[in-house]
Image 1: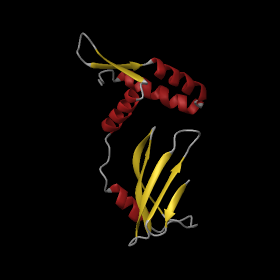
Image 2: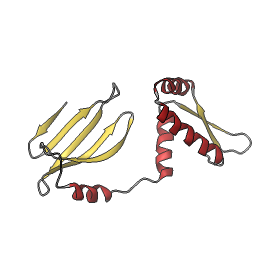
Image 3: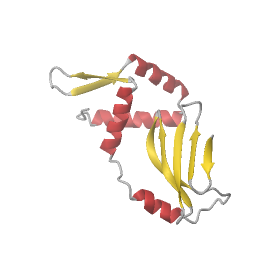
Image 4: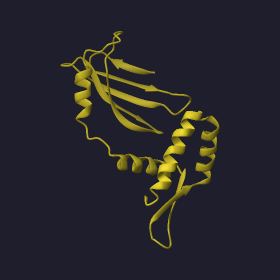
Length: 147
């Protein structure tokens, strides 16, 4: 659902699998003939996007789009992990406490987080469970990670 102001702006919301909608907002770049903008969701990260309104499957502007969006600062794995952790703390899926011995911040699943994990465990595919188990195994091997 959304609105289009021909040759000026495009905005719409998109919903995936009964989740909160993601809002997209674009401005028309006359030189390129593309709508360039960003997206933002309540339970999703923010990002940049570009689009063209036509029925062609192959876009002649793919190289420009890679170059344009590649010019934005990338996120390191550590920054991405921090964003995810902050999001989960903000949504009260994780609880933060201070370890009395080391003084380091420690995180644990809250009751809300445990319910979310249980639900995810029931709906994940075997492949997804395997990926999560691999990540957890690596985290155990690198046990010095502090948040």
